[in-house]
Amino acid sequence: MKHSIGSYPRVRVQDDGRQVVSQAGSVLLVETVRKTGLDQAISRALAPWRKPRAVHDPGKVLLDVALAVALGGDCLADIGMLRAEPAVFGPVASDPTVSRLIDNLAVSGEKALRAIRAARAEVRERVWRLADRQAPDAGGQVTVDLDGVLVIAHSDKEDAAPTWKRTYGHHPLMGFVDHGPGGTGEPVAALERPGNAGSNTPADHSTAAHLALAHQPTQYRRGRRTLIRTDSAGGTHDFVAWLAQRGRWLSYSVGMVITDAIHSRALKVPESVWTPAIEADGEIRDGAWVAELTGDVLDGWPKGLRLIVRKERPHPGAQLRLTDADGMRLTCFATNTSGRPIAELELRHRLRARAEDRIRAARATGLRNLPLHHTAQNRIWLEIVQTALDLLAWMPTLALTGTARLWEPRRLRLRLFTAAGQLVTTGRRRILRLARHWPWTSHITTALERLTQLPDPG
Image (cartoon, rainbow, N blue to C red; front, side, top):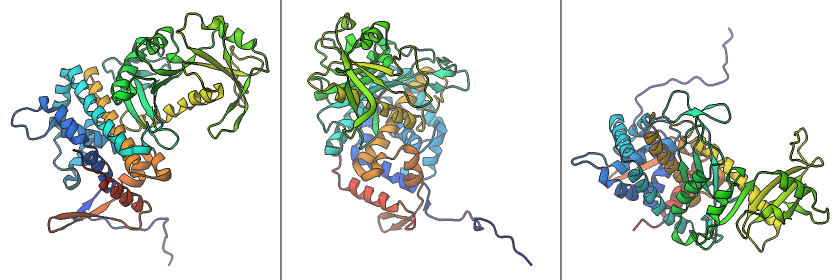
């Protein structure tokens, strides 16, 4: 008699397990909240919205939603994942309580948004001090990337409209602090906009840049210690004039559209003037050259602006555009940074592509859609998404090392947060036991040790 042999072992399932904790690895986020003081800061900020005799603190409720989003949730009801584990997350509010809080904050409008943003900015400054050499300002300058994000809407929501990509939804403009090649990034601006909002709207770019500056320590808001980077959507006269306004003292590196004047001027650059472009490791970039344009192409732009153009052989199969010349792809950007080789400036601007990684992480962390109906509610949701992304950036910065610091949210969830554990109570202590055979248990325990060694918030 032959027995059928399956590919996987047969397991009997029972529902009488005791003290088993799912999502046990999420204690990393809980400990990050405690060590950074984010819970205290948001509780103080939202204290005016706490009603008399209320059981749940509004700050704790909002932070619980952010934790649920960080763990993979994409709607308010996903807070139930935390409610099922009170031993890890404490008391969690009911769904109606969460909905009422979001409605109350939405009615308050800018007042609530400013309170949440101020709390996040306060904690961000502490996190950067704790991170020391791993902080994004370790080099003495902070880089902020601005970029638009298309968010698809599958139902008729307020301000949802057709987008320039022939989809339907919203078009928020976001800003991210670049952590460099050895880290991720953290959000510092999210401007909710209708789906038909323009890509190159100077007023929106100015507002997003202002929000980003408000999230940084005071010393980086002047003295050109903050670099604003955008793609060609930011290369407008009004926005560049805003960046170069007297007294603002910002550095900028914004993409520019190849106009007829720029195209004609680039064709007249002698071959001897073109400088080889470089890669991030300092090696010469094969088939790419850069040059600085001068003359009448700078007329009408702020004083000190430098226009740098790059020509490069297109990748095999790529189609040439009308602005390309002699089989070379032309791109251009403007900057006000002086005293540095143009090849270094072009490399710095090209690294703006890391913003696409930040957008991908945001889509995987609550920005797949805007789940609420009204715009005011979705503005609160954007703050929740940013708080979740903050935690997913701060935890690796403070606790992880090596390549683990580069893990994006999906990988963090798959390898660390979803690890199961057993909660054992001995005396007055609660001990969470993780599976020894799980390949990434050592990452969790080592990260928790690093977080434990950090000083408690004052």
